[in-house]
Amino acid sequence: MLKNWKRNRYEASVLALAAEVRELCSLADGISDTAVEKLCKEHIGKKPELSFLSGAEREKLIRLVFCSLRRELEILHDIASDSAVSEIMVNGKDHIFYEKNGKILRAGLRFESAEQLEAVIQRLAAKVGREMNDLNPIVDARLSDGSRVNAVHSNIAIGGPILTIRKFNQTRLGMDELIRQGDISEEAAAF
Image 1: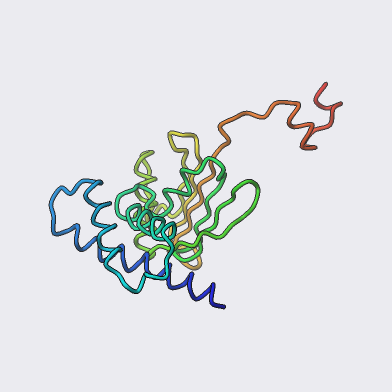
Image 2: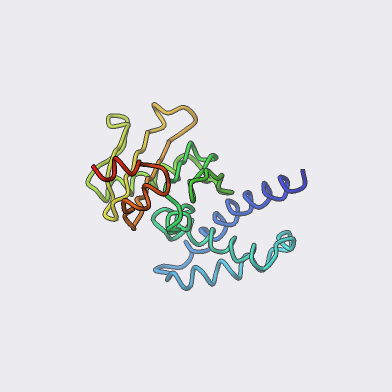
């Protein structure tokens, strides 16, 4: 019970802090990534209500707030950058899952709003010359790294916009590995 309470408090902190730091950033024109990161550290360091966080948790919180402000995938940036992650599934602003090493895990993250999630989807679609809107409610695309993206607009999705990013393994499996995993028989491989 205490663990869930702590996680909910932590998730709420990411959303609130991102909004606070965004407001501080809007006061300075042309602020650099380094300055934003420094601002995140300073602002989070001044919060006595976050004293329950360990040093590692505090660094993770700073990174999440920074990514939510400055990265294309916002809060999904670090998950997408993990080479062991093969799929990211966002089912509305509050339900984010990812597949890592064959296991589906829930990310301790959420978007501030459906509009924020839709903005991420719009940026991804725009990179490949597509757009998602009421007339084009479903987007299927392939990103420059080969990842496949599928997004569904909130007007036809239950619970808000949906985003799925399927990443591909950078190393190709050989026949020996496929046989070892039981994906193919030795006879089929020989054929």
